[in-house]
Image (cartoon, rainbow, N blue to C red; front, side, top):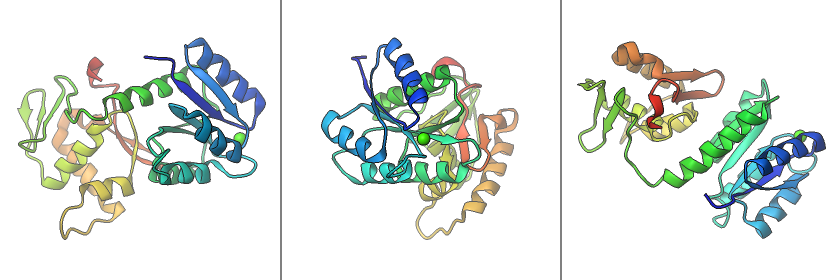
Length: 233
Ligand code: CA
């Protein structure tokens, strides 16, 4: 990977410098913007490969910055990793629905942050490949709308299939209930975000022993865990 430019948007100098240090040591080209407005200016001039965006900022908050970047066709493909305080799940949900790729909560370890940065950049590089292949434990055949767990075909409803397929497109990344609703609802189907919980419960039951592949992220949504599907991802 060429040296990826990472913009750190953070007004707390100690945190910004710490993240800068670790990113530089990992071979990234980090840069710091200490406010929302500076972040927008820097993105426009520097075109970073990824933005680490704190939500609590002095002028424009991180959600507003995220909204502006994702609405502008010149910048909407730049992945955003949000940083929020623990307990601010509602901000995370809003940010993900605005188009942020992922988030970490403060306090975070630099190691965890670097891992998320790498995962987001790697995901962006492979996003175009539509194949869903999580090794032996889970295989999805989109042409036939079929799901195999350890080689055995599952009998899923269309909604359950769509739900699993949607989560499996980005393993390890959380999706909010509203994102799932939008992805799985078909022609003339009305689906509430509460109904998603019911579909997930039914899907987990059909997954049997592997029901734990679908992880609940409290207050945010669901993700397909990558911890239990081996090294295929
Ligand atoms: Ca802050």
